[in-house]
Image (tube, rainbow, N blue to C red; front, side):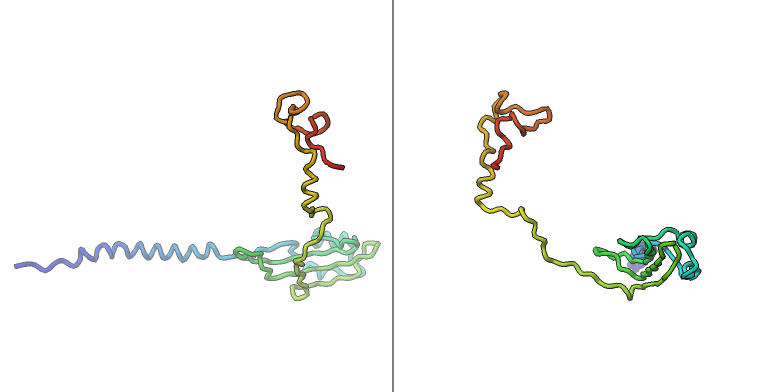
Length: 189
């Protein structure tokens, strides 16, 4: 009489793969967190608690540097306008980072170095500046067919491949231009 086949040998490979699959799935899901974007702080990290200590009409430039540090930038045509820029960006794959939070602190000083005006700007105050797709014309970059033909007149030198002192000699760096080199490099006036 035949005995019934043992079922356990066929389940053993599956039972062995099950823990490996669970561990592999756990590593896969934990690996997703590695590629998750994290916010990146940029610029002068200026907090409201810091700049509220500045008082217009009382605080000076040295007080400002003591509290906030040196400015991110100054106005282009006015050294009395200091700008502190702080932003938090989020890296975006195959694109520029997106700005999550932006704060700009603008301080205006008088000629004596005393703070006169202070204002804050947020991302909502920003204005989008689009790129213009036009091309700036540059004179002299386009030449016609006649200029191409006449531009090469005088550049051909049949003696350039000969080893003589006049037609084919090259300088110490291998250059073949300038006076005394058989006319190579000559162009029309």
